[in-house]
Length: 399
Figure 1 (cartoon, rainbow, N blue to C red):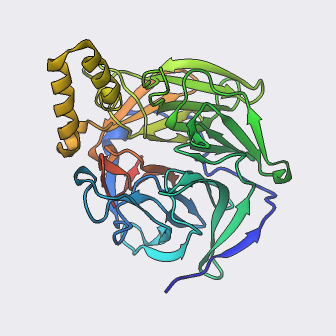
Figure 2 (figure 1 turned 45 degrees about the vertical axis):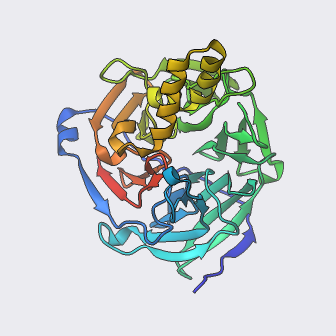
């Protein structure tokens, strides 16, 4: 039975991010050795194995909405991507067992937006489906009394945005990157939820190239709260070749200025790392945790292949052209491990500027997943295991 969602206008008087409070996050080998993964119930049905979905926690319920997959014919065989509007909920008091329940539907099928968990609900921003991109922003709240989803409209973004990133700190939601009206950009926006009549404020753009599917997260630092941006990629634009940034940027809300503060740590073999398609959460009062995302070299080769083929043909390099053609024909058919999605749980300390690897876990080897903090643990929900292949797995990591 289709459950109707109550739509209301809503003026937020208090808006708090669900970050874990307390002392600085301490990286101790003993604690890491005692950490473990717990499998939670899989997301149900054909719409369960999705990526690029909305997800978060409110009033003790894990909420997952929208997303996309290839339910009929695999993407490698030319299958059509399907977008979903279903909202599922899992009661945290039933974990690690329990049952996902269908609790409502979005107004349209959508994926490739962004979502943030707050004390008032899960805020969902932008996204697209097979026909259009969206500027809409709304909040999904779990009503304990009615045991239903309430949906509240918030001010729309100034333009449609998909493949964006978002984060929240205090009373402000921040949005970065993505396709703005279909064009990759460097935009950076803020919404003061205590003054929603003001709408979205346009902040200084982040420096460098445009970023699709970046990662955005807020955390305290020695010089106050900062917003951290990494990952993402700039596709081929006119004469510009594709770019995968490997840096970590920070934005200071007190000065409205950007800084490049670090490079991402290289992989064990010395090759470059990206967090494109990855996810992140703030942990404690000094740590950023990063997980998932594609492999720099493999993804860069894939998005550069068409341009390289054109250049090889122009140079008459038949051998290289044939190699690139064969690589394109076989690219979607490799086993998941071949794509080398990031399995490291990375930690960046915002006070010391140091990177630490907390472990290497196959549960994190996903792109387009959502990472959420729950009760000092982290949850990773859905995502894709390789191009075109999604997962319905939900895993909790006990920190």
